[in-house]
Image 1 (tube, rainbow, N blue to C red):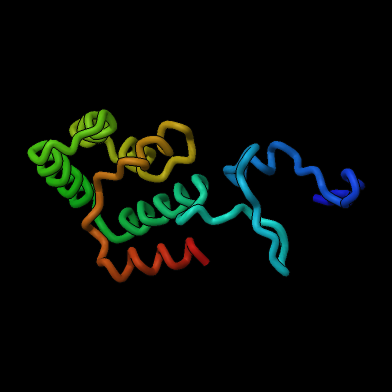
Image 2: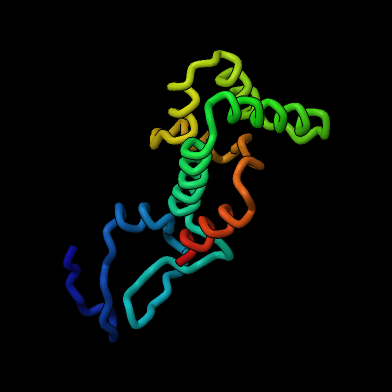
Length: 146
C-alpha cells in the first residue's frame, strides 16, 4: 500500500487507513514507533492482540502436531480438574470441557486451530498447556517477538 506524505499544519505527515490501524490493534490515543525500517505499533510490554493469538495458534499447532487427540483431551481434562479445584475458573473452560467430552476430533482441532472469532476467544483460555517442553514454548515466544 502506498500512502502519500501531506502537509499537516506546519509539518508533514501521513494518514493511516482505519483497517491498517485495526489490524495493528491500535486506535486513537495509542502510539506508533518510528524506526529506520518503518512505522509500527508500540510494544506495550507484549504482543499486539493479533500477534498474541498467532502465538497461541502456533502453540496449539505444535501440540496437534506432536500429540494424539486422546493425549490432548487427557491433558485438557487434567488441567480443568486442577483449575476448578484451585478456584481458577472462567466460562470458556466449560466450553472446552464440553468439546472434549463430545469426543469429536474435528471440533477439538477447530477450537485449537481455527481462525474464526469463537476459536480465537477459546484460545484466550488454552487448557492444553503443559504438553510441550518449556524449550519449545520459549522458542515459539521468541519467534513471535522477533
